[in-house]
Every structure is written in structure tokens, then in C-alpha cells.
Image (cartoon, rainbow, N blue to C red; front, top):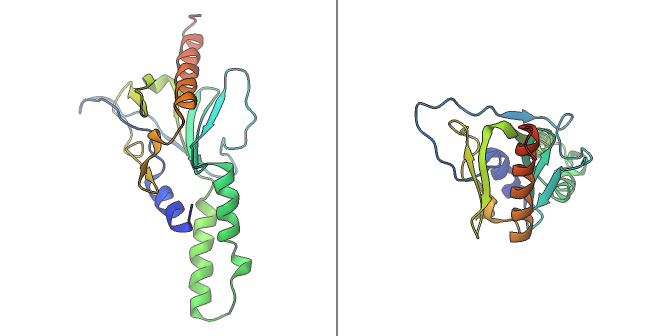
Length: 179
């Protein structure tokens, strides 16, 4: 993944896809977590799951009562190397602008979007992509995001996508006292 793709991804804020909603519904709550509080590196507990896209660019995680998405650990490490401001040569205007842009990208790299599991009515794999249905109007940031011109929710292997959907449904049943 190139720095440009990462910037586009951060601009789109990683969409969690296809949903049905009405205009009069309450909006699903969204949390944007900064790198210091992001769930990207949180160890997984029983029932938690993290899946990574086939191209290793993004991941989707079910951790505790939240579903979150963002750049994968692999992509973050690569982009941190590519945007390292200490590698910028020179001291002129061009170097200053490059440092500013890279610094801005660096500060946003680990940002993740998360939603409460309780906001998800259903999640399933439709044979091509993960599909989320919401309890309320989905947030604008959870649209049809694309990375490298590919639908994020279609970027996971079918096995991983199915495991993710099963894990979310199991978490919902556990939270509702059903087994």
C-alpha cells in the first residue's frame, strides 16, 4: 500500500459496509480512537477475533463489546517507515512541507473507527463481502469505503469473513443471555 492509499483510507475512515436504514432512525454511535487508545494492539480474549484483508492493508476486529476497523499492524509499520520525518532531507520550503505532511499522516495513522456490538442488527457474509445491518441509521463514516479501488468489506477471505460474522452473532447472543 502506498502513502497515497493510506491517506485516502484515513480520509474515508474505513467503512463497514452495506446497510439498510430509514431516515427517521437514530444514528448508530461511532468512536474514533487515537493511536494511544486504539484497539489495534489489544490482546484478544475468548470470543474476540481480528481478521486482516487479503492484501494485509486493513483489519476488522471484534474486541469486547466493540467492532473496530483500521489499518492493519503490517500496513501501519510500513506507513510509519514511509512517513518518517527524520528521513526528510534538506531544510528548505519543500522539506518543511514534506515534514508537515508526513507528520500529519503519522499522527492519524493508528486511528480506528469502532461501533458497539449492540448497534449491529445482523452481520453476514453474502458470498462476496461482509454485510452489516444496523439497529438505527448507520453513521456516515461507515459507508462503502474502498482501499486501492477495492471494497473493504469484500477484501477479506471468505473463511475469515464467515468466522467474523459467526463471532459477532455469538457475542450478541452472549450479551443477550442466550447461548
